[in-house]
Image 1 (spheres, helix red, strand yellow):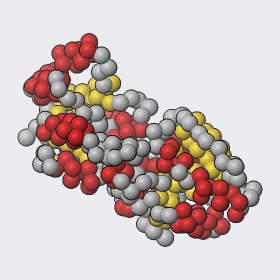
Image 2 (cartoon, rainbow, N blue to C red):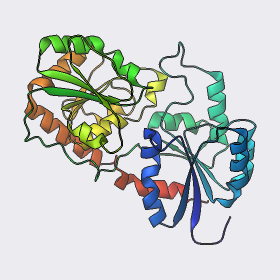
Image 3 (cartoon, rainbow, N blue to C red):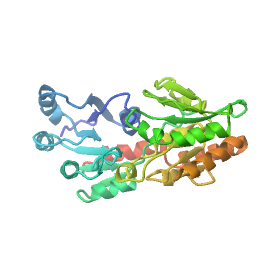
Image 4 (spheres, rainbow, N blue to C red):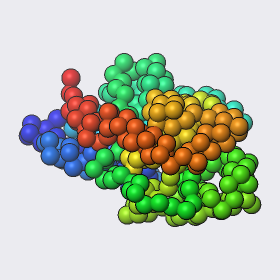
Amino acid sequence: MKTDLKKEVLILIQGNDIAASRYRILQYIPYLEDHGMICTEMGFPGSLNEYVKLGTILPKYDCVFVQRKRFHFPFLPILRKRAVRIVYDLDDAVMFKNTLAESPYSKTRQKRFRNMVKSCDAVIAGNTFLRDQALRYNSAVTVIPTSIPVAKYSLKDYSQKKPIVTIGWIGDHGSIHYLEKMKDVFEDLGRKYPGKVELKIICDVFFDCENMPVKKVAWTRDKEVDELKDIDIGIMPLVDDPWSWGKCGLKILQYFGVGVPAVCTPVGVNRDVVKPEQSGYWATTPEDWVKSLSMLVENPKLRQSMGMQGRMILEQGYTREANASRILTVLNDYG
């Protein structure tokens, strides 16, 4: 380990535009650098030459932060041998297959997760389910929820009256299957409120409904918050399975950031951040979804009051400002 005062951290990420990379670590870099760290970000190696290069440079860093990906044989032993300290961060149930798989269970995924966690000096988990999974193999686990930069998320202007209520969803193509399963709900709402409600999808892939108009908005970093402020109700449907138990509620936090209420499947962190009848509603069956969304479609004052309650929940512990020092503590602990 170097003896100078500055700690050098190598941050391995999935990509600069990947939500997990942005919200789990990249947003904290200015804070970390203001508190005595030199941060270098790098994408995960994709070729043998890149693995060799990574192995060569590991010893120069005081800490290697690995965001989500599990290294395995033959590189994992090299990582452990050459890295001074390894911090592993996860915000998904990577030890299971995703919801689209026939079965969530995978011996290979479990083995790679176990080996990765055992090889690390510390683990940061996005929720308590992920913490409990990691604790099976490593006692140094800290829960730090996915958080958003609250100063960036200005509140929706509720003084502007809209003729159409916009139900919104934000996400990537890997998660849109959750939304597609809701098509019958959207069709019912479209028939119930003709010309008065629409669905807005902020993503890079889209689908259509027969009875519900669909606004298709390509996600961009610069327009993300403005597009969120344009919606009136945010939704986060999931499936109650091991993969979904690892979800960390980013969509809901983004809705709350702009003061918009949320309707969600009560799975994972969703149960913690959405307080039923306060900041939104829980919905499990199609009937639940139609009922909950209908109440919000019909009552603009309810949408506003719930949205403001959601913002308060966000500010109580799900912001970059609240959790930056906790990230610093984990990275800076060389005990």
